[in-house]
Length: 338
Ligand SMILES: NC(=O)c1ccc[n+]([C@@H]2O[C@H](COP(=O)([O-])OP(=O)(O)OC[C@H]3O[C@@H](n4cnc5c(N)ncnc54)[C@H](OP(=O)(O)O)[C@@H]3O)[C@@H](O)[C@H]2O)c1
Image 1: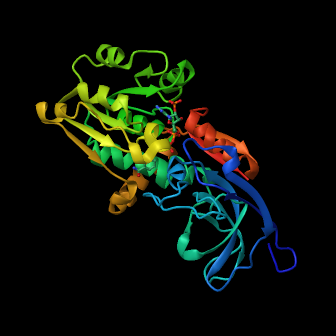
Image 2: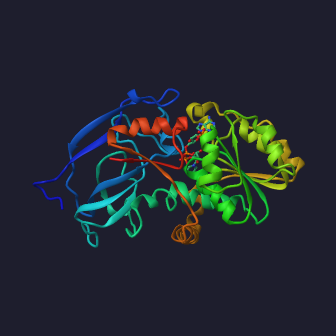
Image 3: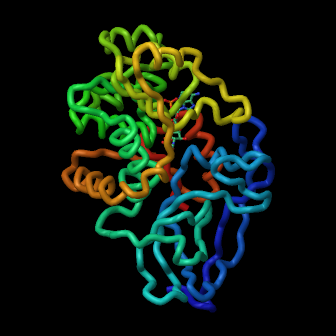
């Protein structure tokens, strides 16, 4: 337990300069300071794991994007899980396991209103992965409520070996669809079919995606769950079936030049096929979270839903982990353990 005399040193990653294209290590600084004493209604949390998410990139521009903006000198925003080590809030005790926007730091003093208590009979990182807001819940809500996947349908997922994509593909499979994933490199294609158990993979770095989609889905695609955007979105639109659905979860191929996003050129396929394309953020489905959480939790408990983790040790590795995530150097959920 932390007290005024033994309060720990917080190691935090702050923003030194805004991004100008891809994220680079010189944008960040590692700083140390004594962890702050919790004020009234606050707790001091020791971070267990930090979620490396694509949205972090969109908060590092010198203009305010959809996910807000990290100020120069500010701690990089990130979701994390940890344990309370000191409390100044009624009903919150040292040892409580929590999840929330703790940021890229080893200790965080935060108001309890920012946190959720979590059940620590599961590994805490589960609440960033399969049961995490920006991973499991995003994938589930996008596939079920936007994609409206049905048994027997053919589903295509881009970014399929990443965090959201891994769960999105498995949700579609568990819902009875034939699932094809797109990912970069032969190891990732193997991961899709052998580890995640989805039906087929396309290696967009070494194969012709348009040809492979036609081979694997000769009758077309009922649902496209898109994490990537750009040319892959056009291939999917070209192969969308009558009454097909395109769920726009993200467009990671476009985030380094967010003010100059390249849109699809084949959007008229939507009209020709009476298909629809619908974007979403997970927060649009807050009313569905209990249902989504219950279903994902049941699949996790039954061992039906896998969320392999790529864990990087040390808070000083946070910038490299973020860069690795964009370069596709991981499979499943990317985490930093400070
Ligand atoms: N709508 C929402 O509420 C919501 C919430 C969370 C996340 N998202 C979105 O979900 C997507 C995935 O996020 P995540 O956190 O789960 O990350 P992730 O998929 O674990 O990692 C990103 C992956 O994107 C792939 N990638 C990067 N650049 C690419 C490019 N130019 N072309 C094709 N693939 C590329 C890389 O895999 P390869 O090796 O296969 O290239 C990389 O592993 C992102 O678009 C994110 O914005 C949306």
